[in-house]
Length: 345
Image (cartoon, rainbow, N blue to C red; front, side, top):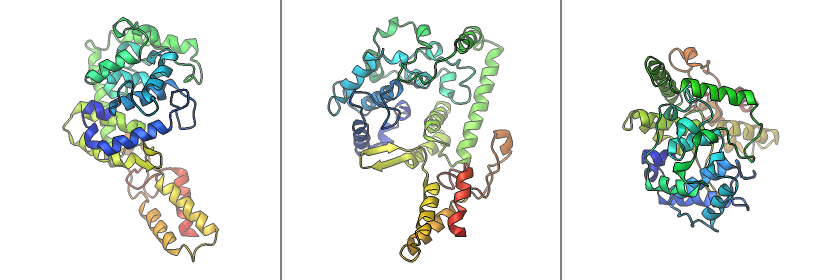
């Protein structure tokens, strides 16, 4: 969705990639037509909606897809009440994509709870309303798009996605904040506060990009931060460098192309080395152990985050190990404990 909005979908994912992504999505569609939060999970509204949109972005028509994938997915969505019952994370992305009216439909007040993560949303950003977006407005809602009362869908959540119901006090708090603050914050002097929040948010996003070599802390944050950089400056270096690290998240498997979190190479390598040593396979696996030891050694984080990292809510990291590799840079305690073990042994 991020690449579609920014116009870089074909650049990052050429035809062969798109074909393999579709194969992965088709492989994990549930029998009821929906998709789960993970490949063994029951169908949920957020997963089914996002997968359906992804399939349509990748070129399938409403009646297309392997084994009628689009028709089956759309039927599941509509049978559960349509996308108005997607949970808050989904509402955020659909608002950015142009499928929901963000100011009224997002449950968490945009000027408060979303300030550090949903920069495009709190700025009022909506992606281009393309013919595909207009088609999706027809396909995914039970009622005509222009007739939906967005305020009434703020707290809707499909039962398949509801892990714990909101207490009434939480809904009351969200509604109070929305009613009392949204009309005021676009006006002076409150709009100055909103602008300051946006500036601080982008400062944090840029700082994290610089200190994890534009990998970002994980795949969910990656797309949001990359989109924020594009909204700020479509031709800026931050966005271009974010694009260059997308391949770090791509994983090719027997079931197609998927996105991983950000990799667990260092952690997996440390465990594999410990297992080989515990099996007394040092003679048979000598070259492998040597290469593994070199990788773990070179993956150690060599520096602390730059500048006044405490003011950016970071901690010392020099000498630690990350979950993935040195570039990622986010220290993890159990990785830092396991990584030295093969070398000691």
